[in-house]
Image 1 (cartoon, rainbow, N blue to C red):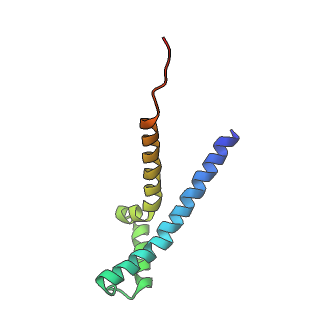
Image 2 (cartoon, rainbow, N blue to C red; image 1 turned 90 degrees about the vertical axis):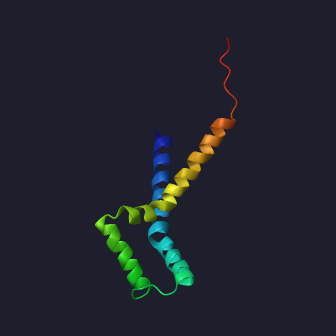
Length: 97
């Protein structure tokens, strides 16, 4: 039971950390890369970009939620891929007989 609780706490901490990255760090990176590639943002700079992002989150826009959750989703996909490769590489168990 203690192991399950610890695993759950680890997963919650992972989710919160990657959610923070998705809601704070990812928009900064998107804005900076967009500014370098496409030029100035059409609004009033980063604060307007960030306000627009949060407005779309509150509206429940699925694409915006996907963007914010993408660090966590990407990490889970990576973990699932590693798990699948380990299962494929492990030799089949011999049951005897």
